[in-house]
Amino acid sequence: MKKVLSLTLVILIVAMLAACSPGESSSPESTTGSASLGGNVTEVTLLLHASLQSDRTIAQIPDFEADNTDIKVKTVLQASSEVASNVAIELASGSVTFDLVNISAEHPPSFVAAGYLENLEPYIEASTVLSKDDFLPTFVSNCADVQGDGIWWGLPWRSDIRCLFYNTDYFEEAGLEKPPTTWDEMLSYAESLNTAEHYGAAFPMAGEWIVFSFNDYMSACGYRLLGEDGNPDFNHPETVAYIDAMKTLMKYSPSGIQSYNHDDAVTAFIQGKAAMHFNFVYAFSEAQDASKSQIVGKVGSAPNPKIATNCTVVGGWGLYIPTASEKKAEAFRLAEFILSPETEKKVVMNGGDTCPVLKATFADPEIVTAYPILQTIYDASADSKHVYIQPNIPGYAEMLSILSDHFHRAINDELSAQDAFDQAEAQIQAIVDANKAG
Image 1 (cartoon, rainbow, N blue to C red):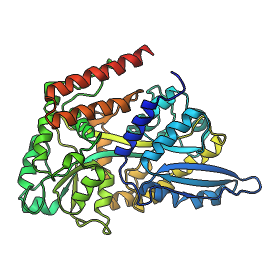
Image 2 (cartoon, helix red, strand yellow; image 1 turned 45 degrees about the vertical axis):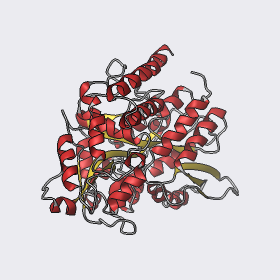
Image 3 (cartoon, one colour; image 1 turned 30 degrees about the vertical axis):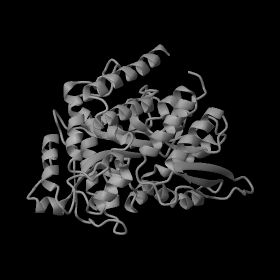
Image 4 (cartoon, rainbow, N blue to C red; image 1 turned 90 degrees about the horizontal axis):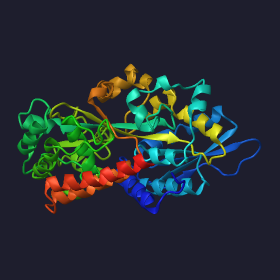
């Protein structure tokens, strides 16, 4: 594969990360750390997308610098779309301004194929601080073994799982004693919970978010985007029914729900304007934040509803070292610190907005007591039969864009549901064929 990203891919990366990055902080671009160094001190630049997780992680950096006096960390926080464009353009140029970067899970396969990311196997093998066994296996293929060949090109850091969140007060008022366990039941609940005071549901649908809900639905039907033979396997009568299911759900959602991104939908939920909400785990932290939430202490969570089965969708961001960095060893030492049990515990206990990646964190009684949702996440993610992990192949971001475009056209009645699926399948098949041809 050529080591130059096409303009199309750069644009797709920008759009994908802008749509798919929950929990951005209020300051989307900032830099900390000094460029003026003396003696034998090396400056390492850490580039992160703006989020609560990033804020809490950066707060721990002084402890790293105190124990590693030969390293000064410069941290750069940027809005998700800026991280996307900077990473794509700089990696392609062969000259980078960052040494350790977090990248959303859909993009590393293409970057690895182009030779942009460092193989971390030698670093992990030599490490006395971390090992592959430290991580929950579910998160490895998303953020580390991104090619599916056993080689770790990154380290899981900001992994996430989608859940159903609900307002316990509204459920009690409606006489609903438990969360829905099937999609049909959830649609029925949405109707029952829809009142003059609040909507039955508010799910993010803008851009690729409509595809994340489809991943839930498709997986619950027992299918995957790509089958075992590597060809599209998402176009079936059961999965095509997703369009009608979403149209039904829209009847009990805020007006304009199709344009709701993750922030819009979670805001409606935590302000008490909607009874149910699908999202990644960061939504739970948002709901417990008294500075912005009106439903603190009134939030329940449940696994995704089932159809043929129930299935949890896993997303996430990994930490990567660019091959163009001249400070790879120092960058890996920083990654070791960020992914130590001590650091991850501090991040989680101080309001990090996503689920942890280390087995030790999930096993810590103090953490599980403070965040009981983690036990549900662990139970779901530990069962591979009920986990959907996105394909680790070049072109996956483009596939998401294709599905998003066709699903929105079907929702808007510009295409029939079946035509939308057929056309999307043909375009995704073309990407698969191109990958196979090399």
